[in-house]
Amino acid sequence: MPQLTILLVDDDYKLVQGLRVSLLSDGYEVLTAVNGQEGLKTARRHLPDLIILDVNMPWMDGLELCRRLRQDDQLKEIPVLFLTSNNSIDDRVVGLDQGADDYLGKPFNVKELKAHVRALLRRSPATQAAQSQSEKDMIQFGPIKLDLKSSWVSIHGGDGVQLTPVEFDLLHYLMRHPQQTFSSDELLEKVWSYAPGTADTSLARWHIKNLRHKIEPDPSNPVYLRTVPRHGYILEMPAS
Image 1 (cartoon, rainbow, N blue to C red):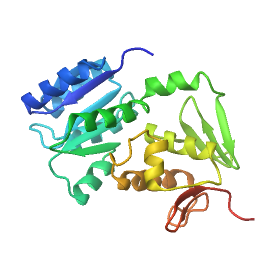
Image 2: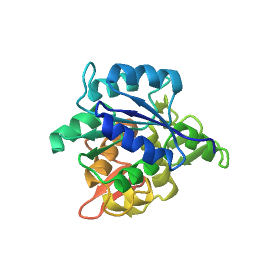
Image 3: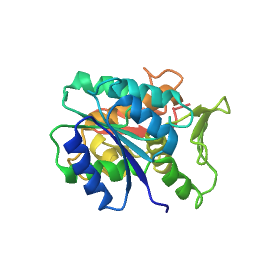
Image 4: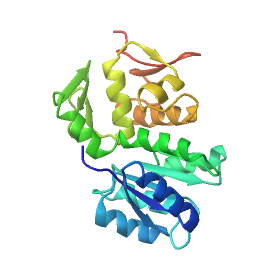
């Protein structure tokens, strides 16, 4: 596995330098930027494996930067971790709406951040490419076909839909474990390798919602990725 690169985008100099030293000690290559504009230029130049960015920054805030990353064909699959002082549910939803994969409220523990980093880097395009070399190119469950190289999913042979790295991990795991029910906590731990209690269960629910919009005929009435009340989620085929 080649050395993985992390881009830190935050106007808090002391925070960035502290995180940079800590992440360098773990063997990552670390790039830095002090605002969204500089962060976008750096991302385009170096194509990092993970981007950690603050929400409140001058010139271009983190929400706008994330939106532009997701519109760029070269950058759209890079996992994004938001650092934010605005830790309300509404603020988290806004960040996830713009394409963020995860968020961490300030102040945070560096060990907690590193756990999120490790989980997100398992979803990076570089890591996915290395893993897919040891697997066949396509897996299928009923009418759902998942291309392991391109991260495209198709239903009943229709036009494919591109999955984000987070959505790919989720669907891949569920297709490997069909007809099994998993709680949000279990998905966070088993799919994305979060240590117990280190991630908000709303993350799992949000990514379930986004995945349903890509695989369900009617996302508001799912037939494949169903909710089992008080237990969690299950991937199954609808009764004929």
